[in-house]
Image (cartoon, rainbow, N blue to C red; front, top):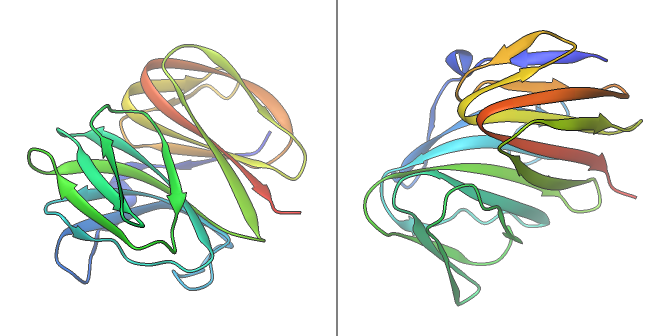
Length: 188
């Protein structure tokens, strides 16, 4: 099984145009793609203030609160309170979305997929589990708290480190904290 390690220390922060926070891209495909042409993109964001989200036509999003008191998202006029960490929330990226912080800055985990090109399933692991990578699929592991280890690979991940598994196989994931398990598939 091919494993690519993506350490948190090597990620540059990109400031948002509205000044409300910064984003650090964990991984994306195809390699070198930007916001206009990715198939999928995974990032962590430091949100310092509320405000409108950028609109991404034709994109589906899953956001997960990692740190902080939480936020209330208004998606197409309906409010959704994200106050519990590690509970993925899916919504359309092309819906008008606003954010209100519930008690100061937050860190969130974001998965975006372009409709017709890719789909994502976001799960959260807080104990040992098997990770299966079927042919044609990629699995991205992102340690959100504590540490994680891939048994056969002998790989240890610290907070916000990631591992991209993109060849068929099975690994045992040992978790000492919380790790996001993102299964990415081509659409169709």
